Image (cartoon, rainbow, N blue to C red; front, side, top):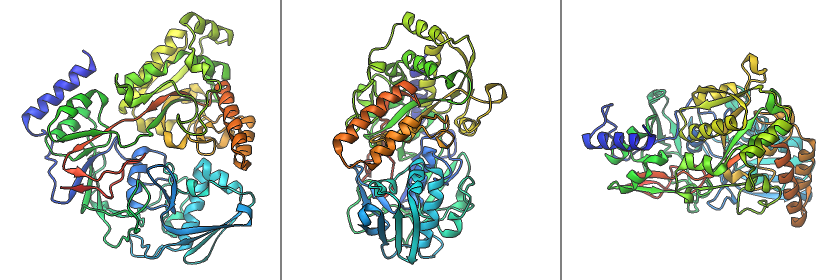
Length: 528
């Protein structure tokens, strides 16, 4: 039986019954009930890059800068900044009225400890740290970056969302960055209600009454975070048909990412709106292990890229609606200044099956096992991994496809062991497409070896070009480097692009004020 008719039938049956068989998802007045795209294992947005943690973190913590709907960084926790010494000294001043959820004021030393912790885990943060002579807090409201080299993108970096440079109390920010913080205390517009958390079932965020928003109108993560509800409850509903039925019946208010197969039914449902809130979406990718097994060979990675049809992957994940995805794509976000056509023939002019098999034979591949981690509980990853597995087998790869949940992938991808000792060769991932606007923020283009993201590609040539891009103030030179970096990436394949996809959200029509941007945010949202 095919998935689509089965799901549609399941939704219709549950919707017709009037109520879920599970406990009722009723809501008190001023309570917004949201269904996130996955269950949540931690709330520490520095310790993990998990999307669901990033989304929760935006409610609890603030950042020094926030990006508006056009991704332009704006002062958020700071009043502004002053740049001196040829771009090497940045002085920032915290705005008044910043208070942590435990009642303590936010001080500059909290910011110093928080930024230092983030820099250890984030690849852009590591770039800043490499240029950092000092990070100082001369008084409670003043923060000073002293750099050895200019870094013009500092506000943009401090507005990143994954991992997020959130500001925590100093006592928590001093936690080892490779360990989770023991408490979830921020200064954001919502506070964590720990005693109502039920793992795998429910998470609760309450309006922080002492939060003081900025005066400007809200635009994504910039401006005034004005909370219009008393509580936000997250309900973890792993079955997409059950979640959609709950939305149709008015038992939940907002589904972050409904299954694409169910979008036609949701569009027809009375009282439901389906809309793309994140017009940038996600860069789908397969991340190869550059240290172990067959995928350590760049020639093997090039054959894999040639074998994979991006359009087929995106169609499997998002359905036939081409407005919800872009494919084929290169290594930069289409429509941004860094996007270019260098090397694009690698994905635009795919070889025939016979030619692909010939390419594989020329690498010397002799049937060695390729361990593909296949997360089955994430609809997008599950769909594209199924297509990738079939494509690679067809070319001649010996694919050991190991099914597991996403949490297991997140744990296992950190292993650098050989394949016969629990190692891996490939896993699917999704990177925030908004970050792939330039070589600084496209962190998975990095070739910094052991310090790189899982997969650990090492490419001094790309690293040198990235440094040159950061140091250049000439737009033409930066565009030349953009082309050179993309060309090199098609040769070394730090990751295999699968396409850019923009999953829509679905919400009840009495929910208004939802802001557009790469992260679902809960300020400005009204429940009428």
